[in-house]
Length: 514
Image 1: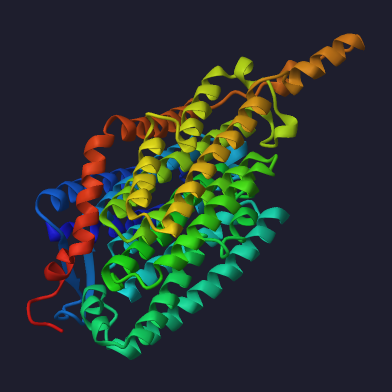
Image 2: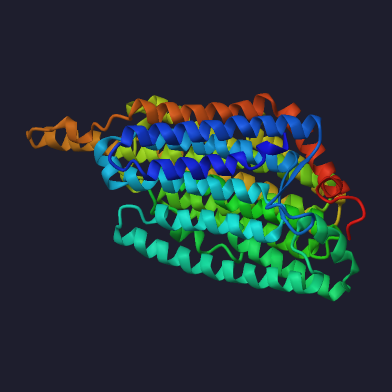
């Protein structure tokens, strides 16, 4: 079973290589991409089942003995993240495949898009399976390299400007990551995560704190934790809808995943817990205030993305099994829901001609299916019971109340306020985009009053069936998280317990290694 560990990464890289050799055969490119991602979903499901029933897996690559080789590891957490991420990526890819020829030419040139998209998935998969800091760095760099290309597809001025900001921030965080890896290796003589969990205990408290701060700051930039999140709202909204969806769903969650590993495996004492709680509250509240101020749906969703990263930081900072379990559940939920909302926004932009609330209206009448596709994930994001968003938030709030410290109570209050304000933000979109009179209807009335001809074809932008189907597939997956919330929450609880008891270390390292 350990031989399956490199398969998700290899499938994505091999698929990208094959797709790159077929620039003049877009149909075959699409087929290669879909088959590759479907294979990753299948392998991820097997890994999730095995790690839950049989325990963690570890594979040493390169022919080197532990702890010198490259380690790939899978436990309940990484397998769950890999499965959710690969399924979301598959649905987003199907959405992109459903674009018409003009959209493909303008938004996602096939010869560039598919290989780069698969390379992004390879980087995400490698990051989730990495067993050492340097391999984690490699995973980040692969996905960042791919994201640079995806973010600037089409070469418009807005995308190039947004890409410039994104590249500068990413290069700075990557440089900090390399410096941190060098500092960790200088202090401990290893970068293997399991080995580090042992050797870090021998360091003095100030040195441990310095290394923890370096790692947390590095990953917080990537996860868009306040005050290191200002780059995100200016970067994501300009990209094509499929790119924005996969970015929102996956990239920041890789940073959250890395913070979970740092705070549970490497620094379980939690010296930064209070600081992380403060950051969580500020991320939640400031992010949602930013969302309320927007009239462009993509920018609004980018701010809600930042805001809800705060919920995940809240659970991590509690440093309890209950808080960590709620964070794992909420992360899986948020990957799905946030990606769904960005895909729906892509359909709104196609159907209404814009994603600005100032230019929308009446979509409930003209596109009722689109209204349903927005309403369900929007309510889920706002935490309406009995949806998975409510279950995850309730778990986080209960864990905060159980801890009972002043900062934990402040985070509980911040979480409740943020949830209510999220509902207000979603209601704002609903009222202005789906109710009222559509701009097309207003133009029709103006033309009628002026006794002029009105061309209805100008305002008729049908939604491609494959795009609608892919969005509905992701929507169904989000509903499944609610239907099977009980077993999934039990799984998340088991994952949290395993993270904190160090069971992964005994699987990765042979007995006696220090």
